[in-house]
Length: 88
Image (cartoon, rainbow, N blue to C red; front, side, top):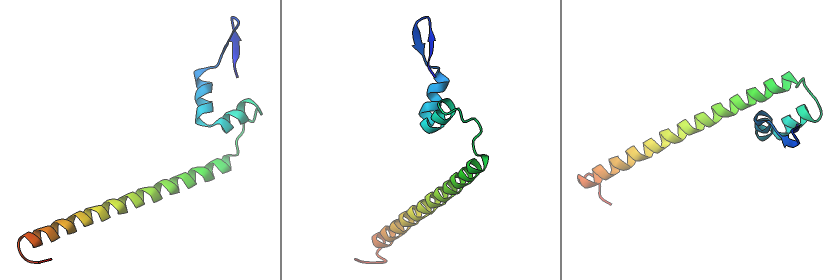
């Protein structure tokens, strides 16, 4: 919460960072004075985030493999075409 020092109002950088990171978390801590979050919900959320990250990483790997496969296939077709093995 803002503090008045020598007639001027100040907000700490840490409090601004908390608000920017998650306004709802800031509101619950500073306005409603809720100090003990539901640890089980936090664990569930962390697990969901980890699962989501693994899914995204797997999709990115599949995408990379497919792109490399398409490049190799394209190069193979071009080489075969230039050496007369196939005609279009």
